[in-house]
Image 1 (tube, helix red, strand yellow):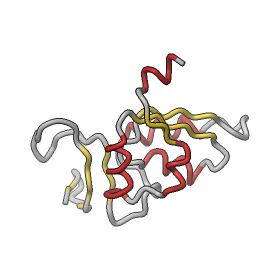
Image 2 (image 1 turned 90 degrees about the vertical axis):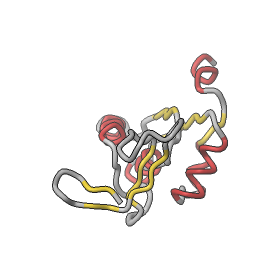
Image 3 (image 1 turned 90 degrees about the horizontal axis):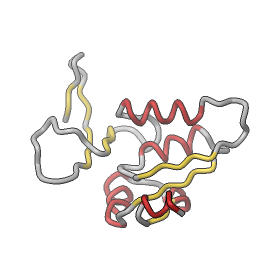
Length: 125
């Protein structure tokens, strides 16, 4: 349970890397569990990336590369709100994908665009 500056609270689930850094450590992925995955975005980074990805109305189909799946929120949001976008997700860890599926209810259709490999190697190729 987390509260914001306005006193609004939500049941959030977060993914963190490394050792425990306290309740207010920055999450790699975060999701309000009262909403369906991809319905809203929690972090300003995800919101900004999504807005930039879908703001070009001149193209009917955008190609979007997402490096790192995290909770799957950004990819699920893009899939829901930009159905014509060609998404490619590169995630280094199969464990991260398992966490997104098991704990964030990532829809199996998202897995069709996920490649598990070293992102640096993907970009080099």
